Image (tube, rainbow, N blue to C red; front, side, top):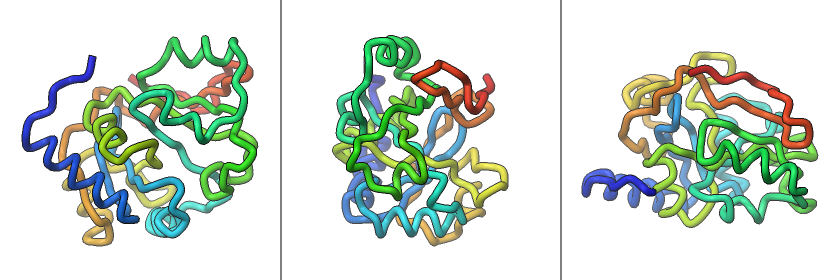
Length: 194
């Protein structure tokens, strides 16, 4: 069931989605921290986001979506065991490394044959994906190797006016960015915390 957003929240979500569709880089709340996001298929927006974050492109980025079908254009073939693993955790605070579509741009997957994806349980982040019309990049709102922002004010302090929009709202109940698991093995690559 999708939580009902207030009129103010809907207005802010629509405004943020418009910025994403026009090639902007935004910040928005997720399950644990604020994320930086943009249209994953806009190479200029992705390059700008990586430059703001000082993140090397070879590492790849995480994509979030409101529902699994929004991720399908980015994915290669999944077997039944993978689907069972991921279905048990979504929507939620677990990011999975899944086979990347063969034509997936390098600026999304980095030097990997997989792509990191999550169906978010955060109501504002999910609403943003729906309003933007698809999956978004979701990388923690911080300069590389520094603590991520947990509030909109913290985002403003870290990035000033370099972002096109900051979607106001509270982060979720978690204290650390999402756990990352390998869908082939089920192995935890990056632990998450409650």
